[in-house]
Image: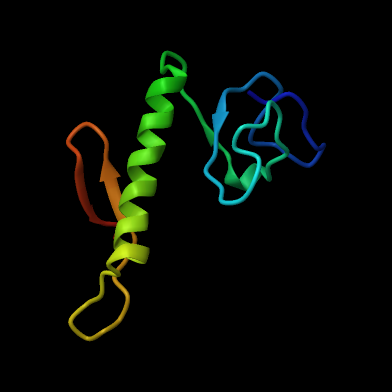
Length: 95
């Protein structure tokens, strides 16, 4: 939840529910300072558990195709990042 804002932030307001993904320390912190461009608005009616599960599916797919077994086109060029559809568990390219 947004607790404080820089005056230049227009996309969010104090009290908005937000989520973010980030590498590094601070995952278990009570409060965290995050750049607004890394935030995603969380719709009303979705629990924290549902949001966390949705984000972890995307992170898992990203890790698997970029770190564990990098996906490439036949030409050797990197493939586009995947889109993960949470309800169906499908993974496909973002175009």
